Image (cartoon, rainbow, N blue to C red; front, side):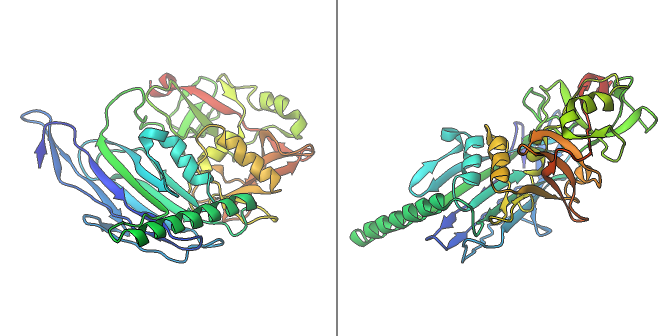
Length: 406
């Protein structure tokens, strides 16, 4: 099919129904449209071919998935779709929540705001609905991004009031719907929860808010910390770094780079954090800043299945969406209140996995501060280490894109 204007395709997740306090069913309809062609000029024809894949199969028709017996303590339910770009044109990915009906209250991305709605679904209910797009762009010729959705419900969330409120509201809503159906045979009973999500792929254009394809989170960049510019190979002053910005755009003039954690940096107690930070970069000629808890929580929150807050007091719970408002501080305080820590998979964030311990510039309590280290070969943790411990301090490089691109 040919078309001279920008084209897009949509992927709908239809009908996430919550029936009662211990039952939920999910129906997802995935639509893929491929083989689009864009005519740039009479002699320059570029193919537009973006394909959605589920379980290695191209998705071109409705897929209905029903799940039952969703309850506190359930295993996390996870769905993943791979979005492949097999064409000649770079694509920008985005999604919107077309509608979300929760206990009779309706929300949309347009009315509430996409970020606020994602945050609400992730944190305001006993069950957690988390959505993530691994990259908001896919380059031409077989680049891909993963669209992930998970539904979870910790057995003991630590918020009995929220559990009770939700249970009562759900029960009253269902009674009301049943009464309407009893008095009107034509009435269609509304589900307690219904969510419709639309994912869109469109031609990537260069605007300030467009994703900067050169700086996705986790990308390795070799950087010269003395000459303040990128390098082609590792040397004494050219070190390996990794992008830790979660959504770097073309309008951003700088990028945050985390130096390789296998290098040697100044170590000491947490009370000496500032002097250790200065010492670690004393021979560098680049702009630096401290490594924050926000840097790390936002990064690991992009894993909607295995990045968790774990505690000996309450059930482990997914970190959830962490890029809206003051949500990072909420999550940090939650971990502290639960006497818990953040845990994430090493193979998902290999550039954060280290056998050494590194201070993060955030206290845990009077006697502890947050530190980063491996738990074992499978996972790593952000935990409260005694402030008298000896850990390293790694500076984050704030690099000018102009110095990297030139």
